[in-house]
Structures are given as C-alpha cells and as structure tokens.
Length: 256
Image 1: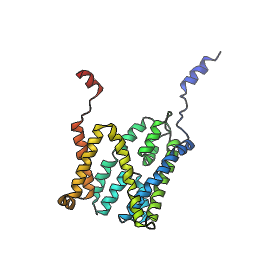
Image 2: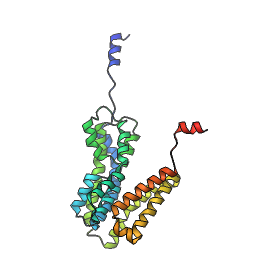
Image 3: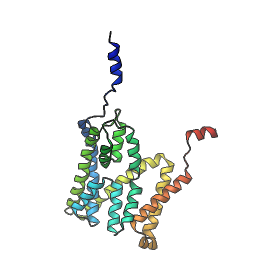
Image 4: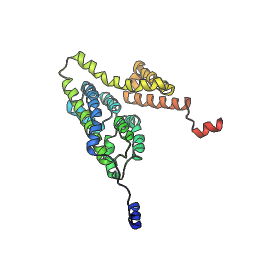
C-alpha cells in the first residue's frame, strides 16, 4: 500500500508537458519545405522580372515568408509605390496570421515563453499553422522551431534558385514558370469556393474590381497596383459581410 504522503506529493507535481521534439518538428516540416521550394521558385522568377536582383529577391523571402504579401509587395515596388501603400497592403493581406497566432497560442505548452512566441511567430504560415494545430499533443518551442526550419530554407532557397536560373532559362520557359505562383493562389481559392457560396461571391467581387482597375484607363493611370489590391480586398470583404451575415447558434435557436 502506497504511503498517503507520497500520493499527495505526486498530485502536487504537475505532469510533464509533451510539446514534441525538434526532430519530430523537422520531420513534419519536410513536406512543407519541399512544397515551398517549388512555389518560391516561381516567385524568384517574378521578382527578377520586376526589377529585383537575386539577392534582393532572396532577402524579401527571408524576411517575409508570405507568398501573397510578397507578390503584392513586389508589384508595389515595380510601380514605385509609397511606404504607406506598402504598409497598408501588407497588413490587410497578412492579417490572418494574427488570428492564427491567437488560435495556436491556446495549444502551446509551458516551454513557449513570451520571447519565444515573438521569435517563433516569424515562421508562422498557413501550412505550418495547419500542421501545428493538427497535432494531438501540445506544441512546444523545440517542436515548432523544428517545424519551421525546413520550410524557411525551402522558401528562401527556391526564391534564389528561381531568381538566378530565371536569367538563364529561355524567355518562354521563365514566363510559364512565373505563372506558377498565381496557379497556387487559384488552387487555394477554387476548392473553397466550390463548397462555399460566400467565398465564391467575395472572390468574384474582388476579381471584378481588380479587372476594373486594370482595364479602365483612368483607374489604371491614377490608382497604383498596391491601392488597387487594398480596395479590392476591403470592398469584397465588406460586401460579403453585408450579404452573408453570420448568425450565432444562440440566435438561430431563438429564431426557431
């Protein structure tokens, strides 16, 4: 029979948290890194075609790790946009990462101090978030660091390879490869739009507004590409809010 004092002592000590290991994170991040290598290759070609050097393109990827934000940012640079335009566009495009960070913070273990949260937030992307939240155990700092290493390397390396080889490949091939990153955006939106009328309508509204800014001469002349992206995104989101208001479960029960 166990001593009662030992039982009390055991209960007073919290169980060790299983936040995952660095090796486990490295293993889970390998497929993401390989995917990023191919996608960022297209961004590297696009960046050089927009006037950036290979090292500037690599630096953009190293400090951002956000495909949509980088493509929009390069477009603003190419059109000689201002800092305010760049700042607002990046906030709107990347605002979702703040929501992801808040959600993921509920799953972190005690090893994730405030400083580590700030440092590791650098590597938070859609794919990394998806893998992290799907884990059955809590997410620790070692696991999350391992999860981000290969994706970051793949994203930066792919960008540099695309930027360097883009100047070597024939023009028809580089043009075809540069379209690849836009294909990735389409592949993200279309499956969601097929199962959600709200997403489909908002996406079509954003496309229609973007077409107006591109094909209407006065708008194309007086509105830069960065502000066109901002206006299209904000207007589409606002229209979606008014057309498809969200009802809480309590409100639905009250109506019924």
